[in-house]
Length: 434
Image 1 (cartoon, helix red, strand yellow):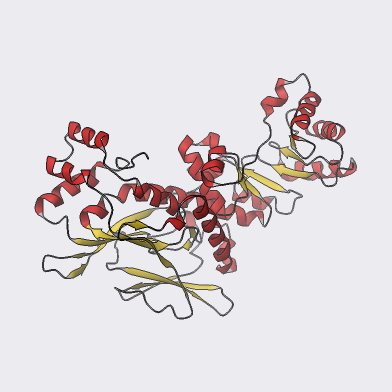
Image 2 (cartoon, helix red, strand yellow):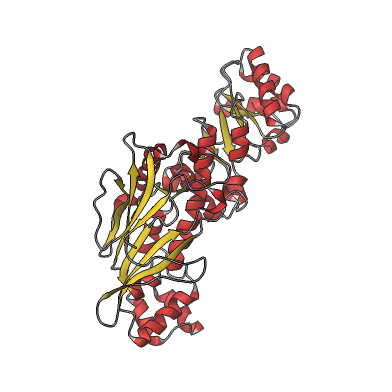
């Protein structure tokens, strides 16, 4: 079990060092994860990464190698090194379920413990939730644009190798149908897909030879890539070799709105009326939406999902909102600087719904105890209690549960949430008890 303890910023440990020195490290504290806004004019966000984060917290241990390096670099005092050697998170974490929708100031995660044990988790926590939630939010928009047609994740070659696996996981939670990444399939149970690239066609003496080899290996239900040379000729060759029961053809280039219609007509004229069309040419939610009226059967998305240009950063932050003061009483605290002002105090959240189950508002309540949800849906659930992680959120089962939960709540959104243009959040955030 590899340690995650040094996946953190230096100032987390120097703050700890100073707090241990002045005696404030043991003050009970409450930290909160939230976003002040939805970046990129998005109408809603999708929380992802919770299961990965809980696993990472379980592995947040300062073993001999980590302690030796910290001592060698003189980052903290010997007293702090001794404290780190025994570190285990023994606090409590509550938050939104993975796959849940969120809005500005939604209390996505609340971490309670001593200042010392909670503050050191900041960087790890934000790096997981920010990355995965940005992917999941972009993926959800693409799924909505596809309007029921399957969308596969194919971005492994466009990002860092470990990020590729977590991106596949986040996309599947948000409704993607499959991934090209085998490690995501092995580790998280995401269905995998893939057949052949242009290199396979170019390897053979002819396109027909490549198609025959692929069909011999994978059967006539496979997907043949038909745009290595001439698309129309490639389709004729594909049907001649595979017959009219060919599973699908894939198009990875050209003016897709025009090409797709031509391909469908040609397939139908050859008798391959049940052969599907998959497109994979630098697609994003806008390109997918533009193809909505065309006879596309499936989409493959890569660069626009996993690259920063395809999804704005989630912008989640981790802030201290309450702590026990020197007199032993709880004190609400919040940053007051311009444009970054916060709201102190522990928070709970309820999604207010109308009689038809449509979301009306995100109601955030500042209170010590969970409020009566009324006719709304409570959003905060326990994730870690006194250091014990709820393992139902981990592993393959946790990913499946997150996917199911997302599918069940996305239908709560009002119709305007599906607009791709920049705009206000789909529902307002109402803060009570401030």
